[in-house]
Image (cartoon, rainbow, N blue to C red; front, top):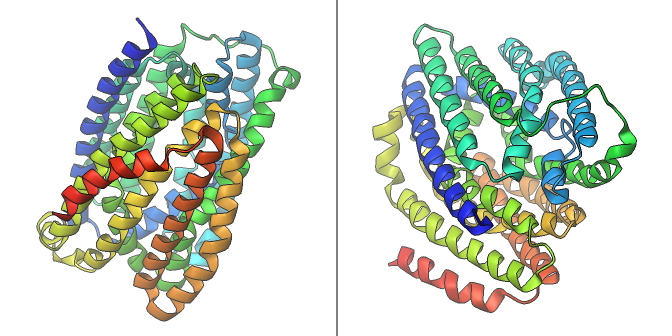
Amino acid sequence: MSNTKKAIDGGKWITISTVISTAFQFLQVMILARLLDPAVFGVVSVSTLIINFFFIFSNLGFSNSIIYKQENDQKALSTLYFLSLMMGFVIFLAVYFSSPLVVAYYKEPRLDKVIKLASLYFVIIYFGQIYLFLLQKELRFKSIAIMEISGAVVGTGVAIGLAYYGFEELSLIYGQLAMHVVRTGMQIAMGIKFFIPSLYFNLGTIKEHIRFGIYNVGDGLLGFIQGNVDTIVVGGVLGVKSLGYYTVAAQLAIFPVTKLNPIILQVAYPLLAKMKDNESELKRSYIKILDLISYLNAPLLAGLFITAGSVIPILYGPTWLPTIPLIKIFVFQSFFSCLAHPLYTIAFTKGKPNLLFYLNLTTLVVKIPLLYFFGKHWEVMGIAVAFLIATFINLVINFIIAHSLIGNFMKEFLTNVSKPILFCLL
């Protein structure tokens, strides 16, 4: 099967996986929003924030370097595998013992059990993660789709069942743990034919992976800070209940970005990595990715903007009415963000992850004073507006970097993107 046919087939399976997983996630949030208090979502949001922070350091971006190098050396893969396991265990300890500091900052005792339980993620996921990377490299998206769907079904069932029986915030964490156990087991089962670990460990065999990964970690760290500093401020200053409203509004508005974009980008990056020396093809592919993302996301976001006032009370109940004005701001932030995401496919394909590091550093320098000024005067709404402005600035710089990598593309892009935008305005 040709790479193009593999990409089309992969897109089909990732679409099926995303639609089913999204349906279960949406069902979970809709049911739990009626069973649990908004403060519970705020508590779990803090836990997710901590987990995502430590996740940055956990694999040094080995997924991107394995795909970029098309790595098949069994000794190098064994070294990467055992290094990931060691780092995962160290991070498990770091997350577990960070609990008192997080509780002290947010002044929320419930966070202690939540964070300690959530730290088990790092004991579970790294046994199967390298197999996921290899499946992506080989464009085995049907296998990936099956494991994603299975994990979503089990995780949702566990979370809803435990919430019904009064487990509160712990129900969400147990649901996540169940999902990771299922996914890890299936990753190993489906990927073992590509790699069986041997008792070999030599950092000298993965020097290029480590060099590639250093910028990944730097970019990930800055990206995490500039992408979550608003959540840190809301939770720490305004409390977990305000954070619950803010988090649910943001999650609903970025649903299209987090669910639809990976369908395209997860397939696009391994495919582009195989044609990294063909610049004209890279440019053409980048424009196609932007077009597809625009056509998929713009109508959905416009629909959410128009219907938020009716949808929120019906689906989540009257308790969640404060999220409506926040959603209308996040819709625009979500659109700018979805157009910025495809840059990583070009940057990694070109072996230039350092450019993403500098992009996030610049965005962070801009965002912090904006959050301070708008948050001081308009609290949660001001923080949301500051996040929107910073995301737009990030997009402008993003396009400048893309221009430097693949040449001029803006005229064609603006012509194409005007069509879905005009449709949404009408």
